[in-house]
Image 1 (cartoon, helix red, strand yellow):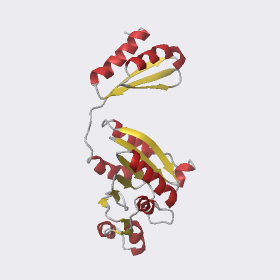
Image 2: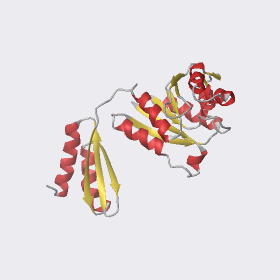
Image 3: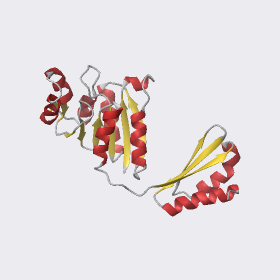
Image 4: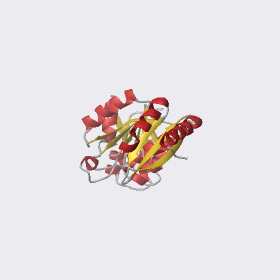
Length: 228
């Protein structure tokens, strides 16, 4: 399946917070055999959220949104997602019931439990705001421990597909291996081959759905480099 991740929050755009949520979800999904088409970061703005979620829902099989589900003035994600699908925002009694177990602040409960009409509520066992799913979009809290809790529950809805990965550490710089690397990329078009330069060495990663093709791509590269 193809996924798009939409991360909501001014704090991400200002650099105050690192987008660890997107990295966590992307890695888990890729290792299940799925593909991340793009990762988008948007501000706490209803119009921006609605626009990006609407576009993403048409371009991917499923969209994952994080952030902006709290009780403060800048928590606008539920409203933005509702607008993306032209749905009414109303108090979800399932969500409200969950929240009343941890707080009696009705103003906060009404704000957090106001979800797009027809949303499926996903319990948050590590915090307050529950996650929810509407159409092909899942929306989760931005606090990493809460996102992980709700994301792992949502992840069970998706099947695990074949995925295999091999990596090779090569001393030196990318320029030294360009000819050999390009030859392998050309020969193994069905394999994702990534080059990740580090200080003094390069990591080459081979990944795909066919174990033998992944292994063969790595072996061919090693052969061209005279390794083993």
